[in-house]
Image 1 (cartoon, one colour):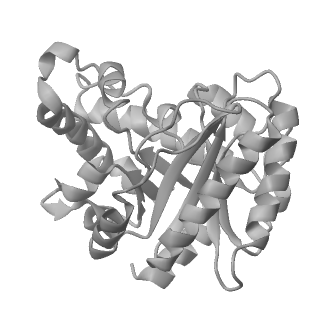
Image 2 (tube, rainbow, N blue to C red):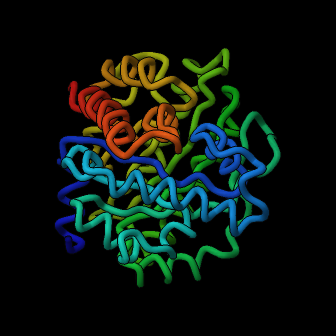
Length: 296
């Protein structure tokens, strides 16, 4: 797929984006969920080899190339590795799946009810490498924990500022100001977030677009105006800790949003499953998530 074909696939594809971008801090938990105990690996190299084996198994599973997964978000080490003897991005594109790369370097401590992204000193080099590897876009995550207007404004401003740098490099920025789904004032805060996002979109130059990755809103349809915005290529939803069933049920109430799930996609996969069992379990999740993504 060339850039225009990937743009069209993301803009109008019937399906969802898989989040396969667990990084250093979240990898041990992801491995435990997969059935790999901490004692089965030692050090970062073995840990990342174990998680790459899981991701490779997902990507090469027959159901993953069924056409219902339209994109996949990768961790840098996954991009640098191979799947089926091919660079990971090429292996994905051969299956009709558009590759994205996680570019943030973690979160700052909470301030004003939010966690901004840490300084991204490695970003220029990573963007150059991502372009060379044929990636289509990027993803970067901040977290909002309360309805603090100053904090939310700071998160959105940072996302759009770095998003502009990413677009300058020729990649599609996926902005992810995640709203903590356990927050008691989420509905109020999502009103503030929506207004801040609309203001941020006003600053995007004509002819450019961004993607938005947002928590499934407390009020169904809250982000409908964003799904129709000419400067937004696609609005995708994170599962945010919801189980697959709950995440799909909530997403189905929000026409125009499609899934970009990690836990909701991978939660029932286990290392000890046979290849047939693995494909059946993954296929069931893919079918369920794709149906919820196409409900609107």
